[in-house]
Length: 570
Image (cartoon, rainbow, N blue to C red; front, side, top):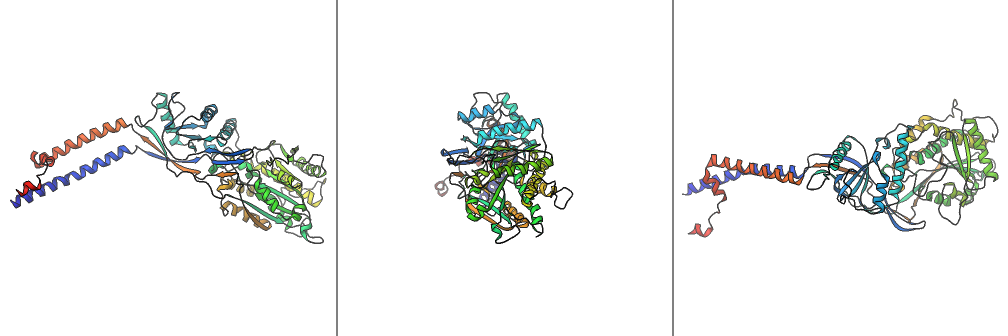
C-alpha cells in the first residue's frame, strides 16, 4: 500500500511538473498581447511652462501645465465632433491650421495632448547657414504665429515638439488612414499609443542670471586709467522660446554675442602693443536676462562704480545682426540732433558707406514712468548714459517674443552678414578712438593681421546655434557660461562674473525634454479572441498529452477534490 501511495504521489508531481512549461508559455503569450506590437522612441521637447506677475499682469499661468502622456494618437483627419479628450493630436507644421489650434485653445476644448512635428530644417544641430527659400519663409511665419499663441496661452494639456523622421511619418500615415475611415484609435479599436512617463513639473527655485564683463584698459596719460573715457560694447546672450530645450537663438542674439567676441579679439591685438593702445578704455559685457526686460543689463549697470558709469562715452549694444542684406539700423533714445548721437551715427554711416552698405537712424523716446524697455540701450539711457543698439530689426521684439524662437536656427543666419557687422563696429570704434574720422584708413583690412577671422566667427556661431540658453535653466557654472568667461579672459583683462537672482515676477518650471514611446497596439477585441483561441488550444493540448501518457483517470484526478483528513483517518 505504501509503495502504491508513493507511486501515485510521484505521478501527481510529474503531471504537475509537466504543467509548468505550459503555464509559462501562457504567461508569455498574455504578456505579448498586453504589451504592444512594437515600440519606437522619439526625443520630444515640452512647451515652456511659466507664471508671470507685474508688467500689468497679475500671477497668470502660461504655457503647458502638464507633462505626462498616455493616450492614443489622432490626426487632423478625425471626424468632426469626435471626443479627443483621451487622444494626442499630431500636427505636422506642414499641414498646420493655425485657426484650428487657436479655436481649440481659446474655447478650452478638451484634448489629451498635442504633438507638433517640425521639419528637420529647424533642428538646432543642423549647421549649414544662410539657406533661404519661400517654403522655409512660410514655415517660419507660421511657426512664429504658433509660438506666440502657445507661449501666451494657458494650455491645460501637455504640448510637445518633435522633428519629423521615418518613424513619425509612418505612424502619421497610418493614423490618418484610420481616422479618414472613421476608425479613431481607442482602447477597443487599437491603433498607436503615445506614452511619456515623467514626473510632474516643479518650480525652479531661485533662478539666476549671470553677467560676464571684460576690460581692456587704455593707454595712461596722466593719472589713473579709469579717468580715461570708456566705450562699452554689450550683447545679451540668453534666449527665450516656446521650447526651452530648442531655444538656441542663432540670430537673436547669438549673432550679437559672436560679433562682440570678435571685436574683443581684434582690439586685444591692438591694445597688446603700447604703441597702438588707444586712449580709451574698452568695456565688453555679455549680459543675461535680455528677454526679461534686459534685467541683467540693468543690474550690471547699477553694480558699476559711479565713476566708471560716468566715464562711459557711449555704449553700443549688438542685437540680431546675422540676417540682413544691405542695411542695418541704429536705434537711439536721445533725439537725433543730439551732438553725441550725431557723432555716433556719422561715424558708423561713413564706415558703412566704405563697406558698401547703409545704416539708418531710428529714434524712439523712452517712457520713464513705464518700467518696460524695448531695447537694451534704453537701460543705459535711464541712467543718462549715451547708448545705441545696432540691429537688423526695425521694431523691438515684444516681451518674451522673438528672442530665441524655434525658427531662429543656424540656417537663418548668414555669417557673411556677421562679418560685415563686425567690420562696421570695429572700424567705427577705431576711428573714434584714434581720431581718424573722415580719413580713408582701414585698420581691419582683409589682407592685414587685424582682419576679421571667418573661422572664429563660424566656430562660435555653430556652437551657440546648438546650445539652448534660456537663463532660468542655466546654472551658475554652466559650460556655456564658463566658455564665454574663458573667451573673454583670453582677450581682455580683469574679467568678472556677476550672479543675480531673476526678477520674482517670473516663475519657471522644469521638465523641458523627454522621450516619447510610440506603441502600435491591437484592439481589445482582437486580444480577447486571440487569448481565447490560445487558451483553448493549450487546454486541448495538455489534456491530450496527459491522456496519451497517463490515462484518462489521471486527467480526471487532477480536477477531483482530494479526500479530507477525517476520511483518511477513518
